[in-house]
Amino acid sequence: MTWVVIGVVGAATMAFKASGPVLLGRRELPPRVTSVVEVLAPAMLAALVVTQTFGGDRELVLDERLAGVLVGGVAVWLRAPLIVVMVLAAAAAALIRLL
Amino acid sequence: MGAASAAPTAFSPGSVEAVQASRLRDGVRAGLPLALAPLLFGASFGLLAIDGGLGRAGAVVMSATTFAGSAQFAAASILDDGGGALAAIVAAVLLNARYVPLSLAVAPIFPGSRRRRFLESQLIVDESWALSGRSGRFDYSILAGVGILLYALWVGGTALGTVVGDLLDPEAIGLDAAFPALFLALLAPYLRTRRALVTALVAGTITIVLLPFAPPGVPIVAAALAALIGLRR
Image (cartoon, rainbow over all chains, first blue to last red; front, side, top):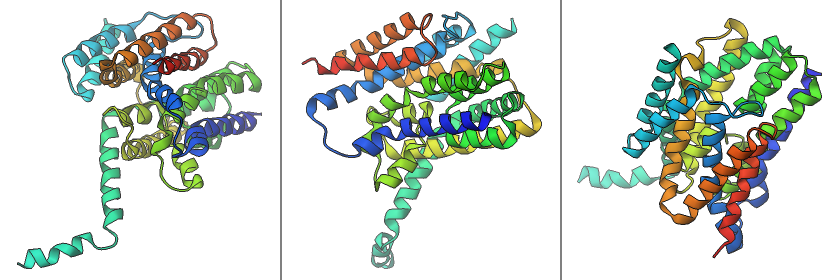
């Protein structure tokens, strides 16, 4: 049965990832569709930030990740490079876990 | 004089490929700051997959075909807890449904035939997708370069984890907080326009409201609906 799981999950994920480039391709889209696709990026990034900061199994989790993201947010505000943002966020979460 | 007369050969056939290869290398380089995470998380997945009964080959095949951390962890831990194949499939498929909106957003950057677009679209993961949009427009060479790097480390890390087990607990060094911070950093440049700011706020609100109730994966898909704000003039 585990191979059924591997096969179905793999096939579904490959189809999800391919949906845009295979179905839409480089086709010109109507302007109204383009304006929706344009704001998909900020929408999905915001959703990723929230799920990866607070996500649990059907619950909101407040833990060390939030402290890390807050420190990372300050670094973003100060226009720190990406790697600095990530290292500061990780260090903050790791330090609080140590305490 | 000699240099000037030699110059045209630099643009002889083959240089297009050379330029593409160097842009791909730039893309790989853009992914290097993220390199530790897929290796460590991959090894953790390999270990969990063995406990969940996927076997060594199963673990590596799953990483090579699914190539999406959260869904793989969910499926393997459900199998490990004796939750059954159907529950594992439903959880993993829901978690990966977000790849439909992510894929639609980057669709126009993929070149070539339909077959090539299908294969290369498999390099889309949250991190390669997000980094490729860091300049405000999606960039193919960054998505492909970061995607190839993360793919190799994820599959390699998984294989390593099935043999030697956990390398180092990613949470002990705070890697689970580094990624939401990365996505926040990549979100920031979009927030200069009012429309994107409102969309991000609505998407974040939808996600946080649904997180306590909906199965994992559903809140983030629902958040994609915030993009309908783009329809407003």
